[in-house]
Amino acid sequence: MSEDKNTMESPYSEGLRQSLTPAVIKKVRRDLGSDNSSTVGNNILDIAAGFIPVIGLVKAKTSFHGYRDYKTAKKLLKFMETFSQEDYNPEELDDMAHEIQNINSESLFENMMDILDRIDNANKAVILANILRHSIKGDISRPNYLRLCWIIANVPYIDLLQLHKYRTDFYEPSSTEILSANGLIHETVIDGGEFDAEDSDKGGSKFGLSPLGEEMLHYGLYNIDWQYNGVGRQVPNPKWRTIK
Image (cartoon, rainbow, N blue to C red; front, side):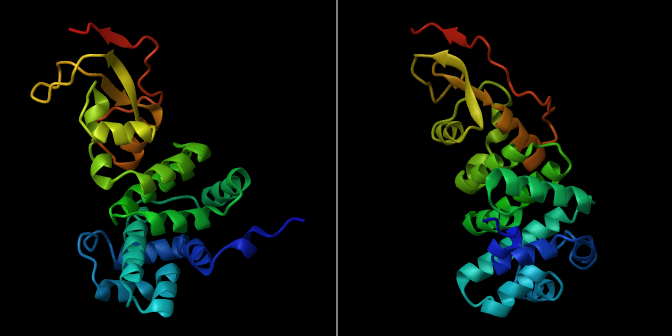
């Protein structure tokens, strides 16, 4: 028995769907702009609640009184501000929503609300908005969009900010292990020697961007120094170094 996809959505995901319309996006761009992105207080959230349906819903149910409710509204506002910075085609968003429903058995908007609820740093909402915008345009495949969303929710923000270092062979304790475990980098130099903290070029394996890592860096983090080639760093024959 099939069900209408909208019947399974929460009020919040439906509110997000209603928020991602040209009329609302235009108001976000006009009335909020980018000047408010760095400082979010209750006053700006109250203003946003007046014309952004999903934030208005959070306010109606919680009045932003609980800490988690305030954080949710803050993340939603950053998401909306970032998404509104460039025009998009509503029909392409509808097409993407249909495809995500088919391949993920869940609404695109339900998935976005889940990720926004889970992220531990409001700045990740900016990355998520960038990823969504580029997936709508077709720069990122639908499956990779879902994978990148999962990664955004699970990788610490401080480690995402280190991703640009892996444009060349690189290793950094802790950050490398986290980024590698989440598919953003892969081993490019295989070395059984011991890592030298004082000279990172000596000893130890090195890592470079994976195809997913390139998409995260280029589309999500907008690193202007990185020339994206769309194929990832290919390592058909990893380099070996002699153990000394």
